[in-house]
Image 1: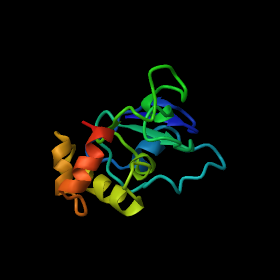
Image 2: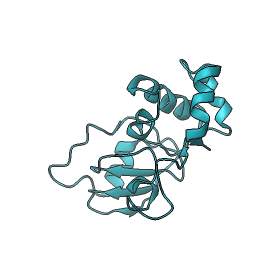
Image 3: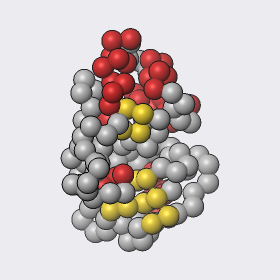
Image 4: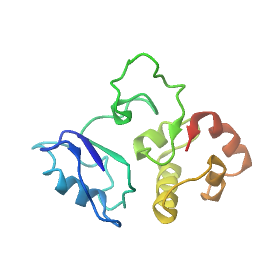
Length: 142
């Protein structure tokens, strides 16, 4: 896992399968004093290759610090599709037509199934039908 943001030891940390965000955060030495962790679901299981950004507000669904590139970097924009396998709750919530409840359902599906292999699998998420899927397709990728 890649842990970035306001943690004691940002960077790559090893975590066994089944680890949760709280475990990965602890492996990075914990959050810096005063950092608000309420935007993180500490109980969520993480997937291999995921980046966890701590204490950094998500301003756009893509091209934000969570992609490893600073905001405003050439070649990044809100038009860049969001990776369903690494997206945070805040990034999913920022997608058009997706609120916090549906964003959490997408994360729950990803946790239960490991990862998305196609964007069409979004239809397996409660609340995503054919119309919602078509409206999301231009904004997401796997």
